[in-house]
Length: 172
Image (cartoon, rainbow, N blue to C red; front, side, top):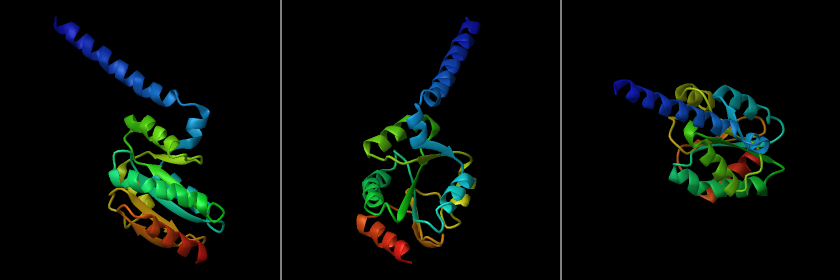
């Protein structure tokens, strides 16, 4: 009887692990292009790659974060409005088991550019993105073409706040 309990536990554990692996493996090519894994260090390199070309808005969000979900459409609209001068870097901070939910949300929001899924340890990730960020979500920072930070904040924002800092970054 005791061995059968361990066997049942082991089988459940293996099925759970296979399901987790299959969730990532089951992504199509376009899904992988829409939501790529990235560490904080890799994201800093991606953000820096726009220096001299475009202003950048970085937004760290999660599907379980109500203010993140509320402000998300504003950012998508502004990316489309200023697409020649601005690049938005969305970073999902969802838990690994929620990756498919994050991908579904991006598709519902009509995001059609590469976004990122946080990997690595939380503290290293936070420190790589900003020394002023406590880790609270949502987190946004806006950089001008020279890579200088124009603004950063840790709470949800209205459309007007995003647009004000985007315009400042573009015209700076």
